[in-house]
Image 1 (cartoon, protein in one colour):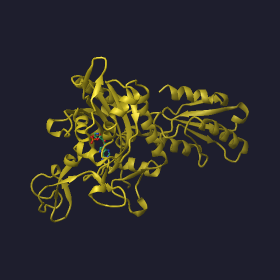
Image 2 (tube, rainbow, N blue to C red):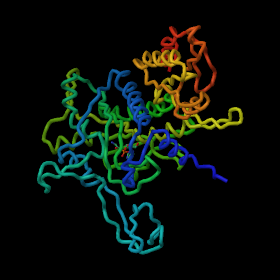
Image 3 (tube, protein in one colour):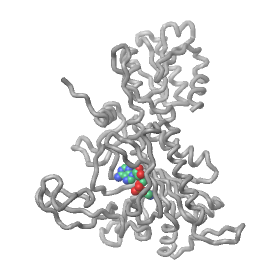
Image 4 (cartoon, rainbow, N blue to C red):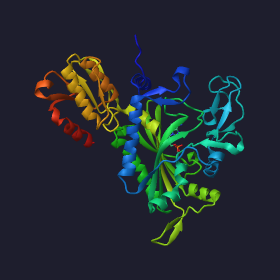
Length: 437
Ligand code: GAP
């Protein structure tokens, strides 16, 4: 008898089977902790970033966007403390040669084979590279371990070019890299991943108020996009857990199948970063409040989320199995904004050229607005199941009657209810449904 798969196995399998996420370099046996987003995963990722950008940049007056480079001056990482402090303490097992983070080891012997362990050694998590033709100390550079520093070094550029007044924020989405020691749990901890970060600059003394505001703001954002409240929680860091730059930090955690784990951290970074960059670059990064005639280094509240972790949470949270007429129906109940495909156009007969043409014409019209798929490669029941499994909110079927009554049937993914609507009303119908979320 086939064993029932666990939730993570189901998600991993669906991701591979339906083109959401593949192992990187799979044909060579894969590269540990790196992942490729397939056709549907790429759409989901774009939609997630778009939703984040929309709510933080477009729908607010106090945040500007930025797209800084991954490679930065090596002094950036000295100033930020990543060269000296972005480290894990590791021990090696002399027997099985496995390496562990010190906090994962209790006692003095190897947690796997019981062998003797080496003394702990510090291991920097930044990925190194060399710029230019000569590989020496002078050409040493790093792949950024967080997008945040690209924002700090551009603080004055943004203030001056956009005439921003504190409080205001800078938002950025982009890749970060870490030579993680503990990996696993699918995309949860990867060596190459994407972050969505805001550095929100505030007047010192108002930082605690803004910190609490951002914790709530970000906690609510995941719920607005469909994550169930009972699967989210806030967890304030204890003093000894805080990163070297933070005065306070709250994690938004999600109840993954492997346990409660961090989705996003909201940190009060104080004036640590701007001060450090001022010191090392010798450039004045103070803010001048011309109304009050005050000059100061702003404090920073940083909501920092992971796109890959969010995607995993949205997949897990939206996955459900139902019984319909004694058959299993798998549904990804993704929010309409996130769904990779918005509409699937399905002709009921593929051997009727007029019907196929009509279905193609409707697809072509909808394509101008939405990501749409035309599919006639199976029976209608199977086509519906396929679309349910990838979270497509609507299926539009074109049947023989459509040729004479000029109507089509639209089926809702969640309720499975069907509406018969005029072809001339199709755009309006979807506009109402996609704009109402
Ligand atoms: N700028 C602050 C910062 O980078 P962090 O808590 O180290 O803080 C922020 O990272 C977020 O980035 C995390 O909450 C997580 O969602 C994501 N993240 C961090 N490391 C990751 C990894 N190895 N794989 C996937 N996502 C990661």
